Image (cartoon, rainbow, N blue to C red; front, side, top):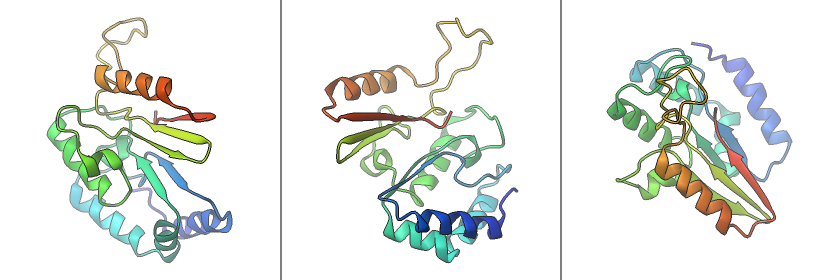
Length: 171
């Protein structure tokens, strides 16, 4: 594990000191090179006990997407989707992840949008539908977002009236 409680406290204190309007975490929320859900729960429990993290989480709107370290070791790609679904739901227990709150049984994943003021954020899931079977970037079968998520993202951006549009992607 690369979990360091002292650095965690310092980092979360810096977030508090900035008096931010919102906090966005773009994946690797806990940087653990472990696949055992029990170890992940232990590390998350340690983080939740950190007073600075607890204060950030309870006082600042916080949003997150996941990356490989939420569900596997470094540079992992999706293996079995049930395991990814389980760990993705686990992520939603700790962060505000609207798609898992509302649910999308036909096209699951961690992608959603939020608007605050003049800015709209489009959170993308760069892992669930990732297909890196080919090593060629020009391979049309190679994708990161999947067909539905890509269509949804395009629609969201086209329909957005926000002055500023920001894509949030962990990869």
